[in-house]
Amino acid sequence: MESKKTIDINADLGEFQNASELTNELNILKYISSCSVACGGHIGNAKSITLLLEESKKYGVTVGPHPSYPDKKGFGRRKIDISLKDLENSLRQQIQCFLEIADSLSTPVRHIKLHGALYNETAKQEELADLLIHVVDSLDLKVAIIGPKNSVLEDQVEKTDLLFLSEGFIDRRYREDYSLVDRGQDDALLKTIEEQIAQARGLVVNQKVTTDNNLQIDLKADTLCVHGDNPNALKLVKEVCDMLKKENIKIQSHFS
Image (tube, rainbow, N blue to C red; front, side, top):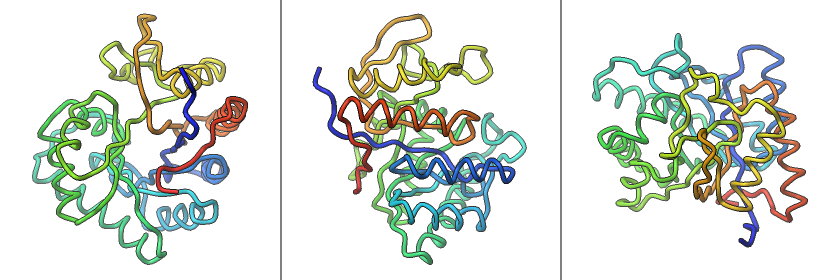
């Protein structure tokens, strides 16, 4: 199969908790084309959002909010008991905070990507997918929604005028049904750089991924994700860039 000429690489940022992690995130910006910035649900505040948007602008990295369940204690990585109305209000508050800062910096907002457990649940539940779309519509946003391929979210977004961007994960292991292996399991993460680079190459060059039961499934990704809180994220994204250069594939945002 002929390789894609370009691929977007995104990172989830604004999740740093100390100076070392911040430095890591700022260095990652040099190698990616888009990023999603935490906006207060699981972590993040006006100061961290402003910092990441200012730095993203320097490198020409396109940006979007990274809202989540309002669950700082669980870092947004667990399901919580919350009504749809309260979740809607939280998502609107998180996204509006991001939008106000982006507007103050004259920074275009290009996409929205949910975080953690809400990302996974919205991929499976029509009412959550519709809730996200409703919030986006109510804010009159013309943005792309990033989510998993072959998901309920993709199906619901494609019924609208919004753009859906399918995401492939470099460092997460997949199930045969296209879902990710739960982070609570030992084999949820690809542990070595070599495994992660191989998965990135497979996603971009062959548009396939190997599952946890060693099957190959088709997965056409519009964007590849590097988790900024991965300790090896900077080394990984550098090596992914080197691999893509050898494959003659340019790293580029869909909105460049």
